[in-house]
Image (cartoon, rainbow, N blue to C red):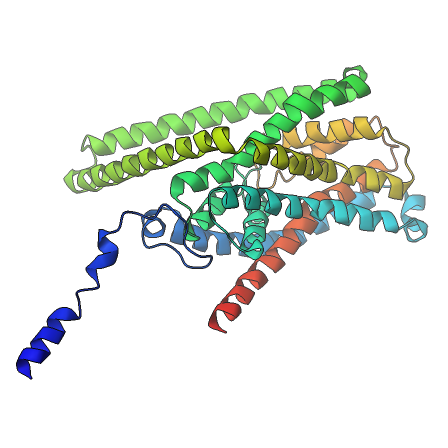
Length: 389
């Protein structure tokens, strides 16, 4: 018996080393089962989870304040007769505005589905929707230029996508947006609408240029400060203990960045070889995404009974949202309203501009962020319930 017991004891751990001899997973694991390799090594998984929860709490706190501020602006800047007749206006256009507002959730999730499945990761649509919602939530608590892509990256990694692949998938929408706008939409819209004839364009150009200089200056200063701090730490000016920790951190960071860059190059090469059709499909989804989002203002104009040029209004939305990327406040608060008022002031009646600005901000920011803050944790709770069940 002792010999048998010893043999059994020795045999028990034998299967354990088997997973250790396998190479790091390249093929995705089934949905909901994180791989043993990439997720623990990623620097943004657990910290980003806590940061996401903090972002949701901040959003739920700040959103009512923003809505109240917009309500106050509406009361001050809107014609009293128009306010009194709001109940008689065709409310169906508000439902259209809501549908257009939520269109980017569907198109964004489908764009993620195309690329994650292209890489072999069959993630459930619920999780893809959560990754889309987190971008809106990230925009609520950070400047528009930063957004929530880092949160999306962390969520992709936690679901088994390699860090480099996740970085590529998280940033591909930026590439698709650039191709859609600068190759197709903007040249065509400018030819049709001739926006350079509008005084509002000169005003928005001045706002954009002045804010761009501020953002570039601040970004350069922060980058220089970070480089000086890192150099001082690695040279030991802060002490030997801090130097050792800094050297270890820098080594790990460089290895991870090299691995992520290698993965990203492999994914881009794969897209160039076998993903051209999928890129064309995501471009169509990108077109639906931005046509829907930039058409909210037209639905509101129909609600208020204001005549408009649809192509020009759509093009001016691109200008407003571009200005917002240079506003350093979370969600471009304050700057978004100023940009909209400056760009549309000559196209909307004076008694309408106040309520138009507030309604536009409500449907393009507060409604989607508020709904995202409510839906995101519900989807997570449903996932846990399904897993335990």
